[in-house]
Length: 435
Image (tube, rainbow, N blue to C red; front, side):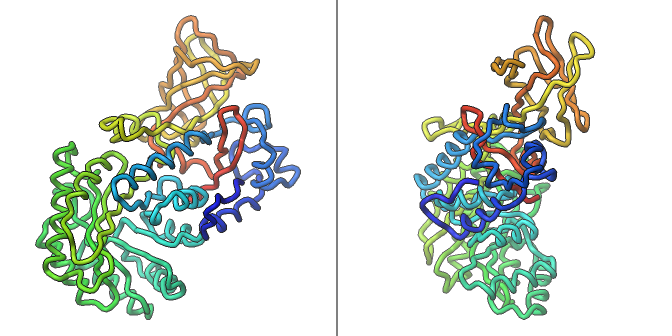
């Protein structure tokens, strides 16, 4: 696996341990001869094999080295340019090596969604975590209390969105004998019928009062997720974000953040981060410095569907661009009829929750590449993709087809090890995921 860069973070050192894991049968697509010889993931990456001729088996998911580098740099530059702190959502990749690279690129920390993901991040040295959820699981809170007490440098922030949830957190932390209070932000819901979050400002104040009445929680800010605004459009998203900014200012004016060194105001998925940047720029001066925390996650690989259409860079091309970094390479295993073909990857291998995969390229039996024109996916079985092949389109059993896919979160979570491949087809690294 790739060595850490010049900024040697604890997360990078911890992720480097993954190089010692055996490159064996547990991981789809890896060369069988690597397992037979006891090769580790790090040793396999160091061999710089070709994805196409180096013994990798199909189906195999490839992550473009160049496009990954581009995407990491693009959001790092964007957030710096707009005065935003960045805690990319780690549930997208659940890859400690990518967490380390994001932190090396300047990320404040990593956002996560559930306790298991927090435990993974801590096991690999992530120093700051934003949990975009209310945490009411007593066992998880007991573990969290121990983690906070055992590492004074560990920063953790999570949502609260109900008086009842605050009571459950307080009870569990008291039972655990927690020495440090857990930092929380009141989650403002995105509207009636949206997902989680407090629906009104009056209810937000009640939740804040409940936090203040505990000795185990500390209110440090407000947050939410603009992607859940019902019928989200740019104007509706901006209006909700202005509510969030106003809530922060009102809490501050009421003295709810008294004594803090930093006030947290956080939002931001991958579809509206431009609106977050614009609206957070309107935050008034507060009683303490404000951590304007963006949490976009899908950018790391981007995609060939959903986020290709939704990325804010479509509205602001002068600000940059993201590049779809995944290709699922499969092999044609059957041509039973002239207009039909089947490849050996299906629902177990390809993201399909938003859109079906798109055929991009064919690698012929002679190793040459050609566009996959006239080839489309019509449906997926567990281990096969059904292809429609146009009249006159040449396609042979044994040829490889590369597909783009939609939705990074469900692309990553079907693969425990993902080869990173450069433009020449050389495998330069292997990314380990933990779903």
